[in-house]
Image (cartoon, rainbow, N blue to C red):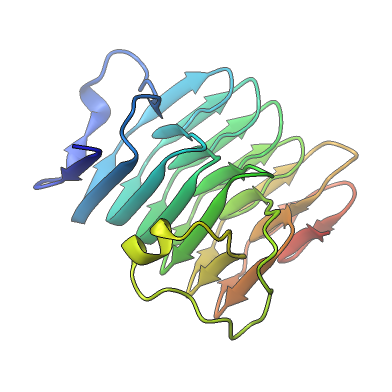
Length: 239
């Protein structure tokens, strides 16, 4: 088979781990990875490493990744390099996230590209479709390119960026397309979070740090963000 499907049947409490969580990096020949959370919650994940610190460290360029109906709570993420978050450190493939929620969590990086849902979507190959996802009551600290929901969301596709653009009607249909669509955020929010962006370059936002070719439909934030330059109440910078 060319795919992996994980179906959660219960909540998972990682508090019993004596060591830190080792982020999952998809490097094998499996093209499709599908995680169905069934509304369950992963509690008390702790990870500490140099970059790609997250539950999923990296989705590489030839991978298709789906995560649905999964919650994360009371997570601690520490990193000495960039591309960090609670859920996905870096997306260089095609990622579909629906009903993925993070709360009561702490993300700290001494570098940039830091968020709660995704740290960074890679410039040339990454594509994200994010629907009905949220973060709440979280603390995010990074030098630059930090966001309440995601860090940098870059996209080099040529597809038209229109608010009412028609997207495929299922994750599988969308992920099978070779076309790189605009980054899509729909019905998402990040609330009651506190954020710090310490570098003079900035590019940090209370919802999304920065990026190109993005569509946001019905999204909201009330986060508090402290920064130096190019820091925004929703986006830090759009290029």
